[in-house]
Image (cartoon, rainbow, N blue to C red):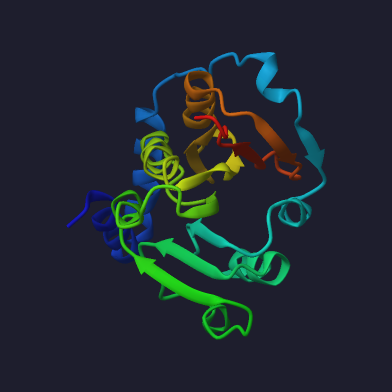
Length: 214
């Protein structure tokens, strides 16, 4: 069984006292890393918007869209309602909590892929998706794995969208490595940042575009 799936299954059955200890252990093992500086050039055409629903209005409608990390399906319904994709693909390691109306919508064909997202994305041809929304494993290693798997699966001129673009080490919340993983990717590959969505708790969304000539 994949390590990420096994961890998810163990967390579901673990007592609360064990979960509290696990969270503290995660914080103690998080490395003291710093996100890199980024070149000014990748922000030249970046637009800031008020929230992530407004962000959806600016992303392409129709086409093929993937969402990594569905959970209850609340944002999935917004994607389907606002962007009206022809095909929607949801990826998660457990769909037991998903609102059934995600699949019974009258807008698009919905396919739910259960398992480890980096492995499942290998099933798709390169440049298959118009854009991919990444909101799955928020650990540094998890985000890096999703980036590496997703960046060739989105079309040239298509987008990767990262939710919770933040670095958090907070015992009562979680540990996020999204900020560092994404900025390292941008430093290396220099995909331009197109949109940045405000969020009240500084859990921003950031949209980057795959260069057309890549």
